[in-house]
Amino acid sequence: MTRGRRAVCAILGVMLLSGCTIRQSGEAGESSAVSPQAEEYAAAPENGAQDMAITRADYLGEYLYYLARSGYGTDTDEETLKQAQQTVINSMIEDRIIRAKFAENGLELTESDRADIEKEVGTGIASMLDSIKSAAAAADDSLTDEELTAQAQEQYQQILDTCGVTEDIFTRWQETLVMKRKLTDKLCEAECTDDEAGTRLQALIAAAKTQYESDPAKYSAQDFAAVWIPEGTREIQGILVGFDYDTYSAIVSLRDAGSDDEADALRQNSLDSLQERYERVMSGVVAGEDFAELMEKYNEDEGNVTILVTPGTEVYGSEILECAMGIDAVGGTDTAVTDYGYYVLRYAADAEVTDQQLSDITEELRGYITENKQEEEFSALMDGWKTEYSYQINEEQLAL
Image (cartoon, rainbow, N blue to C red):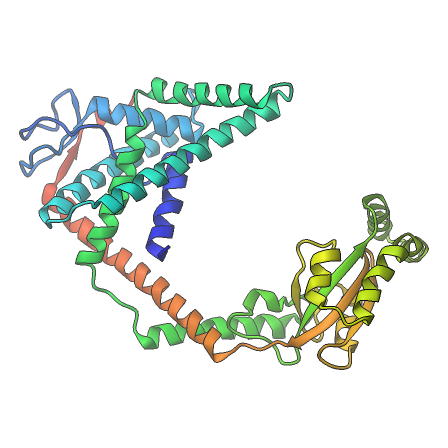
């Protein structure tokens, strides 16, 4: 999936869940130019363009949906409502313009585009239904899954009916997003230069170094591993043989209360409960079994697969740091006793950023910078198009 496509998918999800950004109404106004002051119109272009007026009815459906998905009610302050009105009408104007320029430039939605649009809309609707279903389950835990599904569907349809819109509106919003992308691809030529990508990469490296030098103890090499890793950093594999929740919670409570001696004593006295599991792990280690397979079989810390441990940092705790840095050579192992339990650690490799990694991140930066520059270029085009069409908004038609 391309960066542009990922962005489209993400934006659609936000639109379906909260109602915002570019919006598309139902069928466009009349087949002739209209006066923006006509009572039934919320906005219309002054340049005489046909089929681009926004009716009060179309605007009202989108506005009500925006209010519903934003959680606004009758007690919402006037300023917030006015901002909502401007957001909706401006987005609808941009939608009309994008569709007009899409056709003017001879562009079309392909069958592949339409298949992707249908898929993304379906995903967005499913996500909305899941959210409604989760809220219903939290409110009444006696409901069956079937009842929750039915209730979610009913509430979802209620939102659409109350606002006077149908699911077609989601399809039209997604169509417009794809049209905007294709217009951008055709009309916007801005690109990221090698110097720009290189400068951005060096800025990231400098930021990583600064963070490490300013507070080594809190530095997480994992966060900047794609661009820079401090010298001496090690890749460490780990297997946790952990205390039960009650024991761990008791140790943490003692630490929080400042009773470190009692916490240490409780930890030490609780290790016996781990011995059987710990010895099973160590028998595999001593026998030379593949450590990755042992991790898969025994590790109780799902979040830790391979970590980066840097000299002087304590983001994983002092016990992990001392144990990891004390292993003599790559391939060696040792065990750290922590508040979580036993951590069997293996020094897997010296961590470094390869030339290929730097090349890959540079290309990612190039794509990101190019996308931002083209978005700015498209925004400038849109400003010009708005001047061309000179939409006049009938403010009296925007409020309920």
